[in-house]
Length: 237
Image: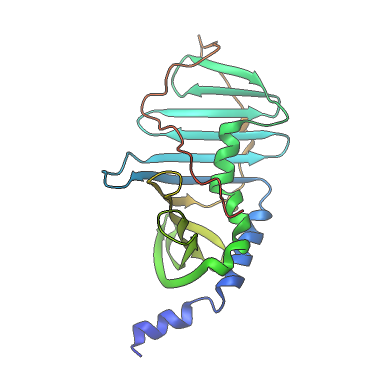
């Protein structure tokens, strides 16, 4: 056995099931959180689309913050009573009361980027450790366990995801996922700030309209911000 291979073996988590259990527990216990992720969507046989940078924060009392950034920036902000949606730099915004059911688009992002990892323990039987690999982070490279999850009998109907997991913090730093059953669309995500590393500041949930801004019933189309595809309804559940 070469020295390089021996180092990989020694660094690898001894039990993928235990690793996924720790990840699930970490995400299930997050409570308030702030995350930043770069997401690229790729349709099979086509050139990758433009990356979308997302910043998502959730706090107590119904407060949340979502920013989607491409060539423009679009935000949805809740102070726990009112929800405002607007394009950064624009002078129009939509204002509505926060309902008990929450906000559909924000909830969808929370489920996709956070909550489904709280269910990883359920799919441990479909997971395997592929290798150890370094992942670049703003604070430096992190040695990650590369874990493949395969649900379904074939690549045509199943849900498949590769996860780059920081074993020390039990956090997903990168993912590559596709669900051929619903669409040929794949999603590649890099978490530049994983949830649970930093707490969201109170200022994120405060909306202050620009001078001359006015509330409208509907905003103009959001340029090249992509609509969410029907990404897997089987989110490890």
